[in-house]
Image 1: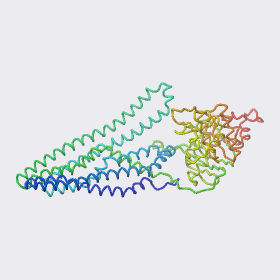
Image 2: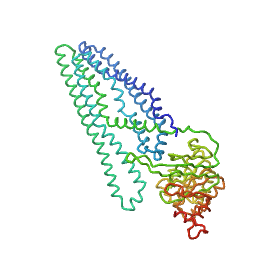
Image 3: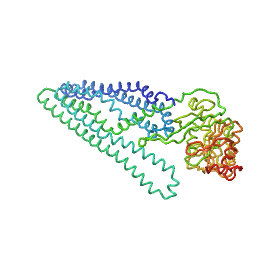
Image 4: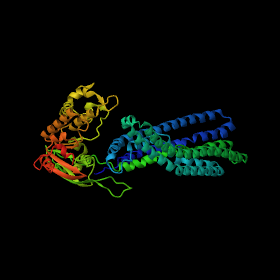
Length: 577
């Protein structure tokens, strides 16, 4: 599948202007930070010696104006970064969410969670942690000011800066692995929590709560252990850096006092040196204090760049005419996902071939793990075959625009869930332009119109939450209505009657027959024989291979017991293959 240009890199390139502006504001802020030391220098060396109140008043007015600009620039810098973070989210958020939804169907992508990584990067851009990074380049300016006051003070400050920087580098390497491992552990823990909540019913009913809680506790402790390990190391360095900086200021005051006694500098320069040197090392302290969040943001940034390299191009494809439903599956082979521990990749499907005309109904039957669901995913484009191809009206599925192809496909997976929203929204696939009559038509074809009207607010009933639980049969029938919405030309139903009663079976068979009469090509993956009555062809899968394919009567005839060669097998006997 063709991928588009990395949207995350594109969004970062558009932020260069914002970063450049923030850099300019940082320059102004750091220069204005010299206001305090220079003011102290003038007060001690000029005002106190001259006793001029007018000079003191004039200097104070200048200081007020400069600090006002300092506050304005600080506000603008923070506002620019905050707006840049939100703009990044707006530009990348939709692609990140789409990638996260698709990641479960693409090899080697499940470990990515770009939605969460984007949130980490966005929070970092709007946090004080990034401000320290913008202030780091201005450390030499403050050191130069100290050197101008006196070289001894300059070299003492440089020595202190070297010690603090070495501590920061040690902190970086000492905490890098624990922070990275902590991020991985947190991802494993979140996945376990999400899956446990989705399976809360069997966990509670089977008395598994304590055991599952123990498993979560073990995962949680592992995550906390890694994060705490990195945090402990960072805290040691942060404490050392802070105490050393205070010691350095006292040392500067001591050396400054010694130089003042020798009349090499003025008393005002002692105070100014202490302030300027403290400001020179402040960005290093700030970076060390936020090192954990900086490390997490760096890892999230790296993962986002890698993940966004695989975003499929939604604009790829062509505006092809609406398909009629002619489906050709030719030599489709699908292998198990790649595994670093196992070099051999068994075949899920092997050289599957068949052809269906508009209006055909195909029943795909076989034992568990025969490959029925895998074939269904390939037919609707969720999986890509490792060999072979699937063509709809002569075009491979990747030749269509993704949204256009989805309009022509109806799909009902084995596991059906309603998203939080109204019944009408779920049936309409959350299309804001959906017409009520189209929603009702799909519900009527699926045989759920009367069932919906009996619900509290009918089609406006809010589902997908614990406040409005649905039975398995109701959810499956609403999923069928969603699959039928928009009169698709290719309808793929995976175990559509697994939760249905006799009435639901009848409605399903009627829906299949109705769609076939409209020219829709229907494929039904089934264990139960009732729905097979509504199809005209049967494909038997056995261990991922085609056992038999053909007209239903012919396949059933061949499935007859050997002792009765003239007899015609019942549909149920086919499922025992």
